Amino acid sequence: MNIVVLFGGTSPEREISLKSGENIAATLRARGHQVETLDTAVPNFVEQLLQLKPDCVFPALHGADGEDGKIQGLLSILHIPYVGSDVRASVITMDKYLTKLVALQSEIPTPSFIYVYDRHSVPDYWDVERKLGSPFIVKPCDVGSTIGLSLVRSASEYEVALEEAFRFSDRLLLEEFIDGFEVTVGLFRLGGDFLVLPPIYVVKPDRIFDYDTKYKPGGAKHVYDLPISVEARERLTSYSKRICKIVGIGGVARLDYIVKDETPYLLEINSIPGMTAESLVPDEVRHAGRDFGEFLEDLIKDAL
Image (cartoon, rainbow, N blue to C red; front, top):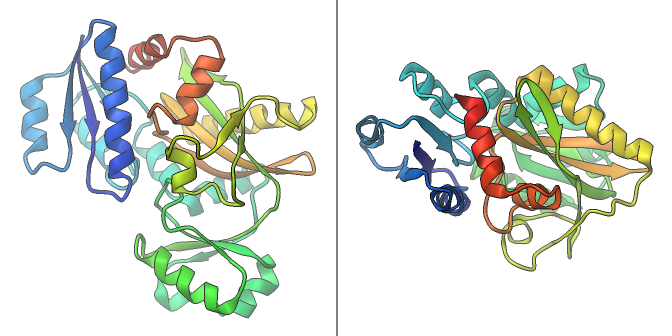
């Protein structure tokens, strides 16, 4: 099968996208597929894509222009089959504000928040503290990999955090900090049903699961023995399937939660999760007893 892996791009998550794409391509080549990688940052990438005449495209793009529906819309217009979520699901999950609205409508717990739609709508620090408590989180609305995220404990830190987040997006989310533990749930669609991979309890050296902790070797431990009850674990599975069905997730997704007092709070949905050697989803696939190459092939078959 002739497969093109799209990677790179121009988002702040380019480095991770390159690593994800190379890992996907190498794994599929080892299974006998003809695989080309194509960086969407090159000016004529659409022309190159058409020349390659792929049977299927495997997007490994993270962030803007990859997870926000643009690539999915382009591939749909070109009538090229692709792995993963469609335009609607990509738009919703890329936007943390829209994801929270869907979670609330779906009766899925999520941390309290304030939506900042531009620089003129930034609330006063003391107003935020009264509503969300202290500390609280400041993060861009439409950037992943914890880029631009800060934990704020004071008015001075608030100003710095706002400037950092505005570097990556014009819209921000101010979010309640829940002092629990982070759990990530991998999930993929196969034959019209959603299959949930073993959840991971992310043991990290600091309070925030930041960029270095996520992607650098030794940054975080992946623990499968979750310190929660069977009932709480069932809620993780139920919440994940419910919101992914409502949103219309395709291919594979990763849902991030914070768990406190047996209650999982949804943080975000990643419609194109990291696929590097250190990433969570490939680890979950292996822990489930599945071959990663076969898993990728299943995603491709589901797309065709």
